[in-house]
Length: 298
Image (tube, rainbow, N blue to C red; front, side):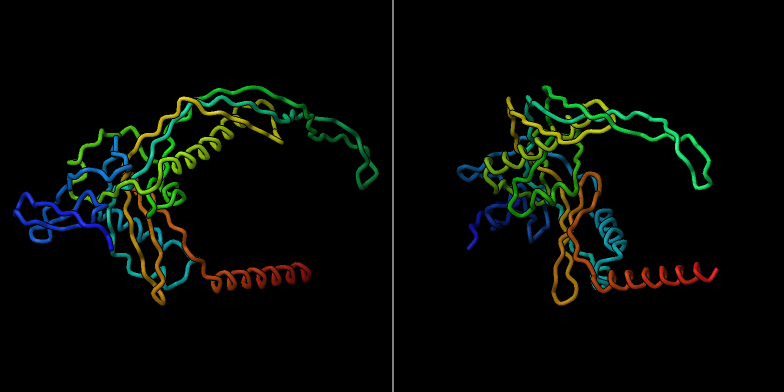
């Protein structure tokens, strides 16, 4: 059974019980929003920053409806499902930054043009050009500062889902105060900070790999290997605005859609309709066969 806490409504004075992990609630008697100010559970960090909601409920709902109806290869029951239930939630996440010291090895390719002569189908000598690549090994060091890495601290929203609605505009950061959450649902961090750090380090390594690849000279590259060490790590708890829309369709199937509360970017992992995909493949094969037949007759 979930733990319960209670708050006193400042508008009507009623004493209301809510689930203990919630930081905000609405009074069931007068609908006034309330922020539940209570001590954090032992081991749970307090938020340091908040990114406020910019997108109103109506627009988030409209964007989700438009997005799902443009997905042609999902089951038809899902495309026509009612998209009505929407909740704006402040999702706990960690804002991660670190200094990176990396070493790399790679093979760099430099393209050059080669001219040669050959004989064409008519027996004539012709001059042609071709592009060749000269490869050489390269190694070195790369130092950078990796910042603005955001990873989930919620058991309810996976990091993959949160990545799907990123980026967030971190220029709009506010120092946390409970009053900023008024009228919204807010969740406390439920993932261990160490687990979140592992997620952030993994994302940082991917970013460092991308930067090193962009930094290298040459026309081509291959066999890039990067070893990086992170220093001066900072990890601060941040609340980010996300709309969550569960959509029911078919035989009580459920899909969850997320909408970025700042940008209205939509994300969800949707099922595919293999019937639709099969029909499209059959039509393509039939059209290709007809085209090939007409080509042989002309």
